Length: 150
Image (cartoon, rainbow, N blue to C red):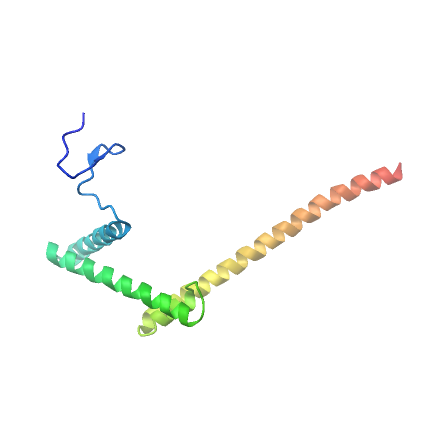
């Protein structure tokens, strides 16, 4: 039997736990995920450099990261809108990264790699379709020739 829940909290039947500490809105869940990831990264750096991070520092870095991501999202939307597009594309991301030469170079290289990969995949699919069509046409022609020859 589940323990008595605190007033105002809900019981999660799936997990068997109280949901009082679980974030309910998507934004809160995203903030929690950012905080968790920042905490993991800080632990990794702390073990490498032997410099501990306080909980307050991790919380501050998490909040700063979340706010910066909100700013990035708004900027990307505005870049796409300025170009009269409803979809954000790679050029918008490059424009966002324009002040960091190393980041811009990295994004450009990754974009070229993805473009090359996608081109190769399309070529492979096209060749496979052509091969399949050739194979399926040949038996049909042979069967038709056999009927004509009788």
